[in-house]
Length: 278
Image 1 (cartoon, rainbow, N blue to C red):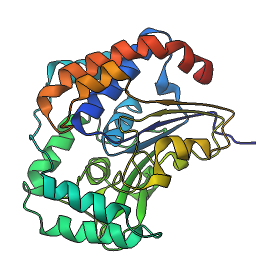
Image 2 (cartoon, rainbow, N blue to C red):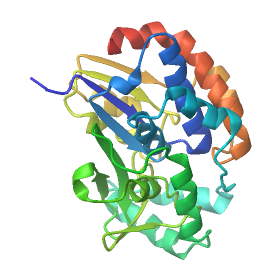
Image 3 (tube, helix red, strand yellow):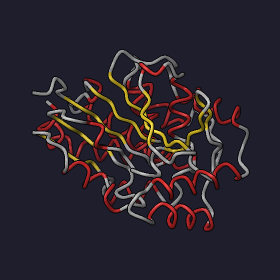
């Protein structure tokens, strides 16, 4: 029998995904459902930020108002059409995803982006605490040279800011992050949420700003169905939330509407989540 009762998985989705997921967590807490009691946190890209925040001792209302008020100064970004084509084509071809991931990684190395130091400062400001929590926190990224997934934990002796930064390093938009002699990019390029890392937890809640990724078998719903969890739920943006998330997940101006939408949606789904979590 598993010794992990509750696992919280939060997937990628850019700045609006961070805001929406924080709004979900805050709204659920208002309804008596505290996702911070997870025994295991799994974070990918935007979800790496959210899980690191929720696993920290920072008050939820502080995290909520960071998004509502836009107190973290972000660097505007976005993928142009050519970037979308690169990710779509290389991200979906072949039975083995690693070669495609390596091709994306090589493009990421050649892309013109902001300096790594400037990007790291942004990640620092997103995180209220820069040390790994006592909780089981798992942060995903992709090794650019091998195309394989790396899962960072407190046992790896990696700075939390660097681990989260690597997970959020959207290729062709943000610079890859060097860690221990390797270079890493966004963990969501292969799988939007890496739900499989919830393992054999008995209760699993997945918050996924993105319903699907580039590879069919890695959609959060597909991965969740493959788990042995006794209780499970997948939280996706509903119609109202999708309207607030907009078309550019990297637009800082959209955070305000996204966090409000997440909070409102949480009230609508609280009963279903409570049945799984409590």
